[in-house]
Image (cartoon, rainbow, N blue to C red):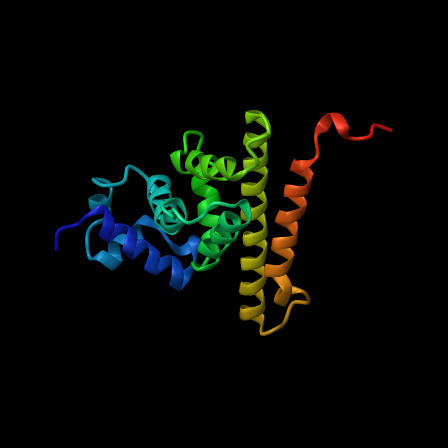
Length: 187
């Protein structure tokens, strides 16, 4: 078997889906691929680089989705992509927290380009970051609640309306962005 970045990411995704982010170690990935842990470091300098590559894989359809044009569509697709993978929101958050994350820049650029062009560039930048933070936080909380409910066999009130609440939250952010700062009443 020729070890490639693609094979390593696929093995890591299998582990992520089966055991979660906490158990997705370089050693476990190497073991699943039946290679020495050092072999992974030819392709990824550290676990953070692997996490970034996995995040890129999780978000590939969103970032390459030519049909996504509105902030509502983009945020819903981001949420869906994060929820499709166990600990997906946590993993993507970790990847996007890297100071020079190209993926974060790409997601924010996509979101900013979907916002009202009448907004100034700085407001679109902040609006995009706010939407991204909302998506990551909402998805992480929902995933944690779903995992807790699964692990304990309990139900969580309101979890069945998470998608609707998410959409309403996006609408509230967009409504706030549509308000011109100079027209806001100051009391």
